Image 1 (tube, rainbow, N blue to C red):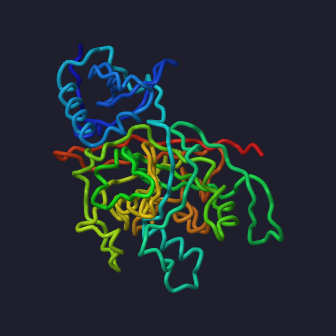
Image 2 (cartoon, rainbow, N blue to C red):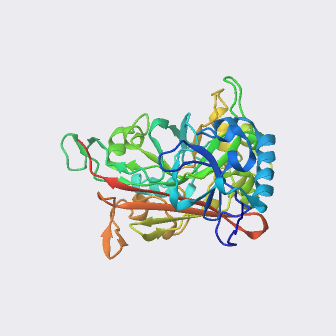
Image 3 (tube, rainbow, N blue to C red):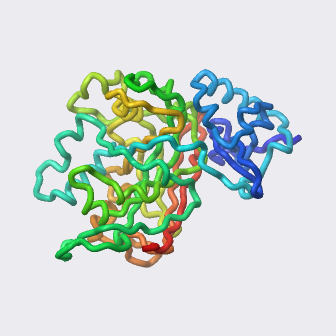
Length: 392
């Protein structure tokens, strides 16, 4: 038995208690929480066979009452002596996706990001936002089968592209490979087809949040996206952090969204629209290049979920919807390299090199922390991956 020593600044203290799926030395996948630098097996800790499976889906589907009960049970158990069989140093485990990703929608919820891209792509338009942007959370339906966990490297995608000087489209590897620093929200309890989830019911359905990197091939995207939106420029890979921070751990991080004007339509209205005060950091080959602030996001997670289902679309356990690129008002708060380098015209310094878009061998790591209960910081861990050469 071991009494856990929890460093005050670990980001994985009692205010956090995230959920994940791990394995040791090729063994079976099992569910766990993380306390400090220790992965704690939940089936052993709680004596609950639901957590012996290699997925969190059963627990996620059980709903908020069960989530609250288990969270309190974990908090009590890790304060006492913990069976040694439950404990694994974080450096000795392999982390996996927390569940099978059922479906995936990506939004475009940052006014700063949308405005920056509007200025880049429509410089002659006095309003950088398209007419619908402040009336609904704009999004697109992505490909869940290529969502991978942190540490899985990304192969440079191939596709059609047509540069400004190309007389005809060409096929080949993307030459404008980018990131998008986002948050992803996992659905625990879905809704039936033909029904919808109101903004006030989000807490009954949202299980937790992860860091999300929506890798983007900007040259492929630019040629294909009119009129139906992103496809191959996005579908090749998206990466998530392995630890799911429960929504309960983020209650202290709730802040008002920016003022929403004009007033949204009734199905999107909230008495007090809430966002989350979460600080992200983007490191390119180990060098921090941006600090995107999630508190600047215009549309709230509850509004994004409400919009997803307002037409009667079904959501399921394991669905994920992502926020879209997180950007703030400052030049050092832009969450995509297309913004950070202003379309490649303003290179940034990465370890003494002037860089615009990703090269083979580059590594991008995104971290995030939020304010937790009692002033404790809550860490999301990290999502990291390196770029491998194209295979076309």
